[in-house]
Image 1: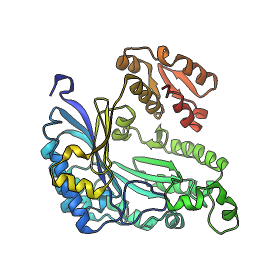
Image 2: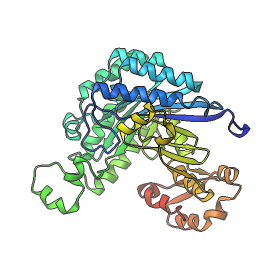
Image 3: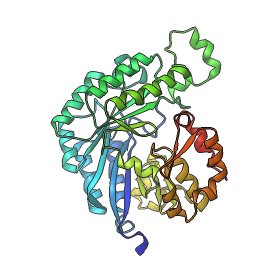
Image 4: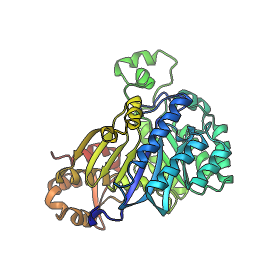
Length: 397
């Protein structure tokens, strides 16, 4: 271990690729599985974790995030085993943010107590909507009543950092029904709210209904709820920030809002290009500007680990060039509302930002898509509306 990386921060992401039922809009690497399959995967994941003991001995873990899928589908014994392996292997900071994604309908009071004992201190609950009809349309397994039961249990078990995930632009949703969802959730006073706009992904059931323009005429003549139009989406987008700001939630990233001090440290680490190690099926990593991704075949993942062939887990890898690092710095940094620090760019790359992106920055300023403010470059409101276009301008290769 070199002095360069000694005691550097490391983020951990653990992928739990299981759920009770696949949602109609979901294209994540996840799906239902039997108890035996889950047990075998968890055992393999624990062995993968232990395989990193020497390799990452010089790092200190600042955040841990269990995502999926539905991590809360694991039993208490399985969760205890995963965290035992983590603490045997990694040096985890005493103040680490440790998050778990969970879905109502998969959580019990016993599981919540297990999470607290394991050191989990942040819950991310996938609600998506307070409207039971919308939940049914999305293919969720829970009702609003199930969510309220889970949320109250979490508070009773003394969890003080809770995120609630919401999805806007659901078929049939109106600006009024979205504001009802926002108000209902804000009244519960979670510390964090993630408000994502629905994306119709290829390969999902939703894509068959909503993703192909040639089907528009069919939709118009059917009773299938229709997606909100672009104008309603814009109104929803603007109303979300305005309403949540009135409720003391600050927008710190394009789709994320938090009460002061409750920004998700794990996600901020991604946007600020911290080192992170992905564990499990299909997990992605970036360590010292080297990106690598695990294979996505679950049976093969388990088989390779059972044969101690850990190196073969990596399916893709890339050593990022200086140019690629600068590009990532720009388009990831613009996701944050505070924007990109010119000073940090110069510190990291040894160059002034204008010497690399001067012409692009001038063009974007002239188009009123970005502004300079207190040594930071950030998106304007208009820039946020077409953020994908703005970020693409920094891919100069």
